Image (cartoon, rainbow, N blue to C red):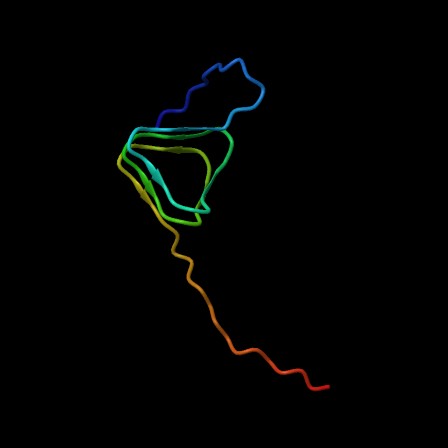
Length: 73
């Protein structure tokens, strides 16, 4: 994706999200993010920068469940 400056005449800028793009719950788009059309974000994604059209964004982080250690008081 080519990077170019766009003058917005505003002090703070959120994100631009293209047509037919879905953003899952608890996802965060950082300031200045530009997402083109037809993208899908799974839940719990933290994303910044630019994303070309027709992309799927998901996290490979899995849960780790371990037994709790008992207090020996």
